[in-house]
Length: 209
Image 1 (cartoon, one colour):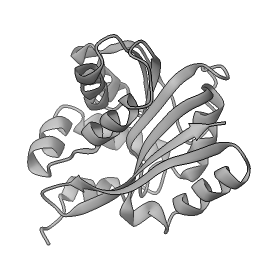
Image 2 (cartoon, helix red, strand yellow):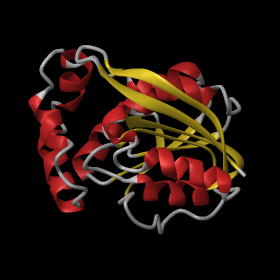
Image 3 (cartoon, helix red, strand yellow):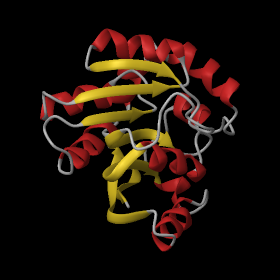
Image 4 (cartoon, rainbow, N blue to C red):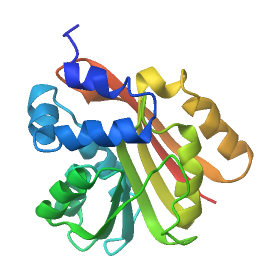
């Protein structure tokens, strides 16, 4: 198995501290795309976008939750040009990279580990989040706010790094959400994530009830 990228090893050891995460990604923002796409073969944005477009209309209003440098937004627009996409992220420098790519209607700073105060209930037709639900970042509790801001019937697509899936409680949380009648699980697929490092994720598609 290839050695894991040292920046990624550092990223997943941040312990969920928003200040540490923000500082880390501020420093990484300019080189993030090359480091992920070229060095490790990161396919999270592609698989997440492909999964979401199967469940939304051509003119849907989408939230890219934890949009980073805008990789997911680009993949969504490639597939459905007329989507309207909003993005949120913890790090201003990452949002600046997203803004330069152009697929977003609006971009705002938000901490997905807490309440999304600036977003009303039942706002979005679909939500996508790639690379956020992983070790040292946002835990499974972050799903509650995504469900709140999604319209009934909306699809929520997330990637969860396999090392976090059971260890950090994502599997149990998703099962509990279904038992509680909040979501219906449409798909859970074990998928390649970093193709050059043999790292996998769970690609999860939920429908809000």
